Image (cartoon, helix red, strand yellow):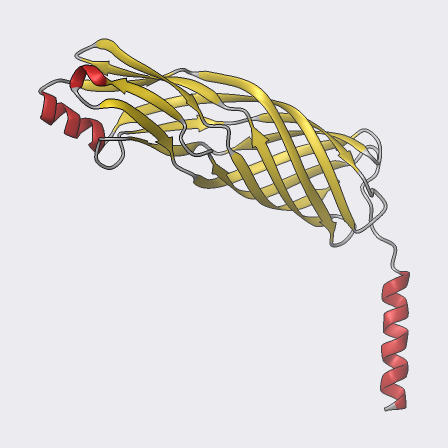
Length: 225
């Protein structure tokens, strides 16, 4: 029993003596994982009164996808980070139409300046702020608009503006595992807005100012070199 207690005490002392492997000036940090883009509720209004549907709410659903980022530490406290992702596809629902009215695919690269509060610790919280440029690459009609086609005897479509530029903010932390590996959690707010135009028989019919403005929750594994 005395031997076990001695070994336990020695092990604890050695663990406490191991210094935290901190981020340093000149480090590159690469993080890979997934994020949930969760748009705010009630993303806009679409005026459908000419076809008897009134002013309809537009809602964009949340989506989980693959995200990755690379950061460069200019000092132990200050770094710059570029967030990238594989394409995200969101369903768009319009009040009064069944199911999904349309889908839209986008990429949301975001460039941020970060400040790390505790660069010498194993637990390294930080905040960041920057700018987002979202590319909307594809939009397509789904069962909701096809149902409108059948009901009204028309041909509908949707057109989403190609880009959105807005501010972004984040909070997060890195938890250091060893000299090269760490885990990361972060939460971001991103200002994403676009115009979605309903097309009927080849002509613009109604346009909604769609405010997506999501909260983005991310979990990543990081590598430092």
